[in-house]
Image (tube, rainbow over all chains, first blue to last red; front, top):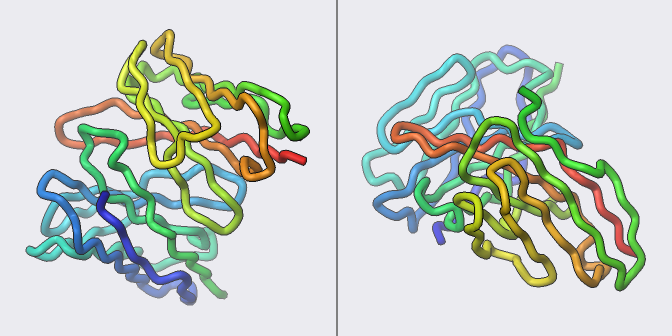
Length: 111
Length: 114
C-alpha cells in the first residue's frame, strides 16, 4: 500500500494561495492521486484527482512532478470557509482495497 | 438524489452488544466502502464491495462483517461491540469511470461503546 505523508497543520490568511504537499514515495504505476476535504462532523468531499503533470478545476489545482513521488494541492485565494482537513489519497482506482488515506492536513484560515 | 445515507446518526452500545449500521446509495454506484475515523485521525478502510454479492476486507476488518445483497445497500455489522470500536463510521460509494473515480461519502454514524 502506498503510504502518504502530509504536514499535520497549516495556517493561512484570507485571500492567500495555499499549497499543501503530499509525499508518496512508494506510489505504484497505476496509482492515481486524489484529494478530499473534510469539515467537522461531515464526511470527506472530493476536491481533485490526477495522475501526472497538472490538473485544474473550479476549486483547486493539483501539481504532480514527473517522478510522481509527491503532489501539491493548490487552493487559490482561500476564505474562512476553506478551514478544514485535507486528505491526500493514493490508490489504484481498480481496486478499492488499495485506497489509503493519509493523516490529513488541518488548514486554518485566519481573517 | 439523496446520495449516500447512513442510519443511525448516533448510537451508544454496551460492551458485547451487536448492531448494524445501515448505508444506502441511490446513485447506482457499483463500488461501496466502509471507513472508520477515530478522533483526530484519518480514515481507515474496513470493508469494501465492487458489486452486489462481492465483498472484501480493507485495512481494519476485525470485529466487523458486511454483506451486499443489492446495489443500493451495504450494511456493516458489529457482532460483539468493544470499546476499541468507538469511532465515527463513514460509508462511501463510487462508480468506476475510465477517466475519473470519485467517492461520495455519507454523513457518518457516531458510535460509542461503553
